[in-house]
Length: 506
Ligand code: NAD
Image (tube, rainbow, N blue to C red; front, side, top):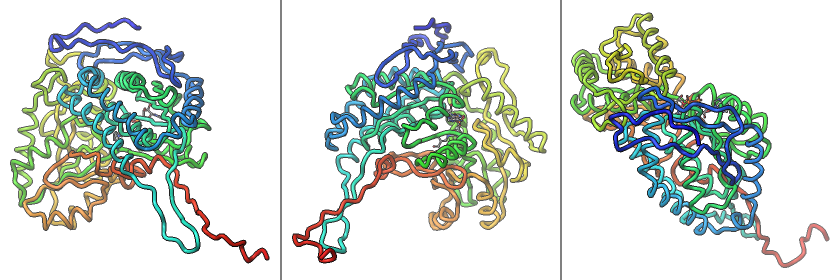
């Protein structure tokens, strides 16, 4: 175990950081990673929480081989769906039993508020329960026959799934990949993001101790360019499921194309949030604030481009900026905090640079826009809620994903103008519409190029509802009953019913 460098902060009194054992899970065995050490930070203070030995390319090889063997072992391969489902239920139970620790770890490692990480852990347990139920109730298909046979289409596991996750919501994104992949009968090699390995290692331990056969799950922290590449290019990996940035996703898709293996990609976004002139202003203001500034804007679906009908633009944006400036910025462990620190000082600096760029492009900063210099926030990776206006939709701050608490506001004149601007983006992950009339919302929702559209709500998620992006926001969908099929191969089987020899051969 490495030394804990951070002392519990005052805010954390009674909720001190407890390091996770400094071991990685390689093909069913826990051992210290033989790669370089990475320093895992507490973004609320800038202190090093602990050091973690990263995995190596040899670990990827061992994990993929052990995964293939475990997936092919009759003890796992021959389980009936309801028997495999039992493993998922046991994992859900283990997550719930360890929920307080997982939530605290994620707050320490990502800066998110404890309320949010508690909800994310509950959703991770729910994901395992959902896929257990979907597995038990899923049916293979008897297809219509065109001859004297019974024809059917069945689903089979792919083998070893390479799962590569981002840093923003590790426990939830890990569960969204591990649960359906196991449900489909596969083994999983999970690579958490370099900045946030702790929750994934703790989750791996819970899953391992829940009785899942050894080798079915490996957790390999390390750098994307080294370890991620090693997973994606390993000949034993039969599918890659990736959540992260579009540039990385494109690179992974190239490897997938070379190897002719399926790749599913959940990528970035620059989602429009739209306020029509008949919206309930109080409801819409709070909804827009939540859509962009919760999770400190570090959400793939963050509503980061605001379009307001010019008729109500001035009053709406002024109210919004005033309320944004009143949001409470602080450590995720403080129950009063609404906006926690960003995940890492390097990421905070990239967000700050975007705001400087927006200023240089002619943007007016209505609130926020500078790294706070309050003593209580010193050392942490804080950035305040920031609202910018006066930019054209083609400005870089309106087109590129900033992935932080930065909202750009633009007025629109009529629906054609709105749809043209909202869809003028390489991304298509999500969109929001605030209106008093669902008859206006419905056709507008259908015209927006986005994988998810929320009307009079934002950032609502349901594991039963498929989620994915269009354009450069992704390829394929996660969640929903079809989520298990995404980790399966379909096989067609014909059972011939003729009892007489085939006449062709006579
Ligand atoms: P990232 O692309 O930098 O990293 C994501 C993961 O990929 C990390 O584990 C990283 O180590 C790994 N990686 C990096 N280079 C790699 C390579 N060459 N080969 C294989 N793996 C590699 O993204 P990030 O900064 O960790 O996360 C933020 C991004 O994720 C944002 O763009 C955000 O929108 C996106 N995201 C999307 C969703 C979604 O569901 N659509 C959800 C959360 C985050």
